Image (cartoon, rainbow, N blue to C red; front, side, top):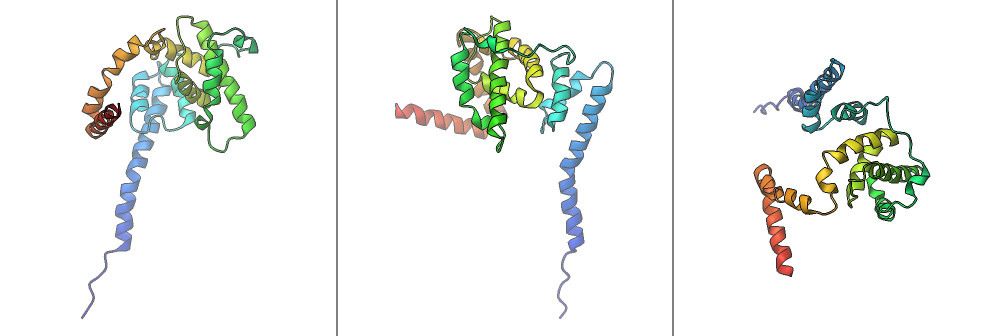
Length: 216
């Protein structure tokens, strides 16, 4: 009795290969779209914005360094000067910023040398205080440093200042008021949005909130 023929291994590889290549195909298309958007005059900001918020984001730090300034309309040839040490003298937020930055070790790449991390932490303090000093209407909040370090690690100190000035004055403005009134108002929308886009996570959060309330 002849044994049944086993499925072709070669065929399996082809099927598997096709499935694996689909994400790569999307990635290559996105790279082409971003490249074309950057090289038209004027820059196709809408395509860059769609690429940034789609799955996978802007893919690499090299691309982010090119795209972020375009999205925020920052002139990379006219950046703020590097802050001096005197920026820390008498600044009302210095001590709080220092404590937050010292607790931010996990936000730096694993395996980074202590000396290199120390330099970046000093730059992180400088960027935050510089933005706050130049924009007196803005008020520091805990967690702001997490946003700043994300930008700093990608673009460096001077460009980070320019980008964070725009972000802080517009996108993050409501979170930088003297009180949390505006923030509380925005947070009211969190659960309805979560329920719409991710019902499973919304249910988990609801159960978690109920559990926490019962403790008290």
